Image 1 (cartoon, rainbow, N blue to C red):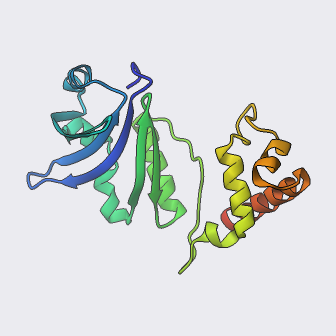
Image 2 (cartoon, rainbow, N blue to C red):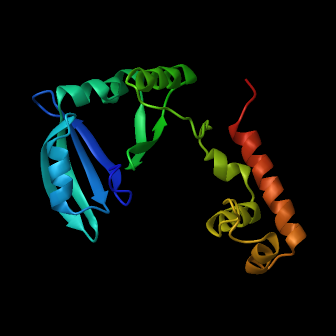
Image 3 (cartoon, rainbow, N blue to C red):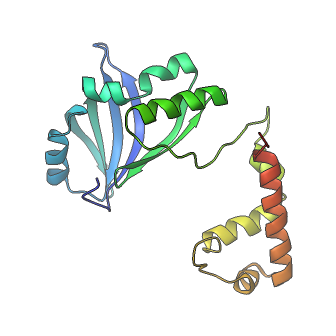
Length: 198
């Protein structure tokens, strides 16, 4: 994948087989069959690649982990640790993974596991759920949510910004000052709901 920046891998499912192997199902896009399958054939972490389906420009594949791949995977730990994989995507050899973990001690355990396998680890966000409600949805008013999402989708938070505050206000039908106030209140609400001082 490092050789093909356009390649994207998305996790679909992962199971134990009856023979004790880890079977991994994933979608690939931005690649052609033959070069990709040739590259996978020499990958020491997987074996038994099978193409299963193609939907538009995405290809569904299945592989089995080798002993090397199983040793590098955290999958065997998930059941004992009550860990749930929510999403996993890879581009240019880097994985972005979202997981539900029971506590911070388990997070530290997984971080140490990746580091011990010579993999870099960076925590991008940490969320805490509340019983019976969606924490992020509950913390924002409908207008704050609309302004925040519109600003994000329009590139307001990119570097450099893709849209000015005044242009964003015109798109939303709001004064520039109102946009500024809504964004600040939304960001404060998210910080108060999702972050805590250690």
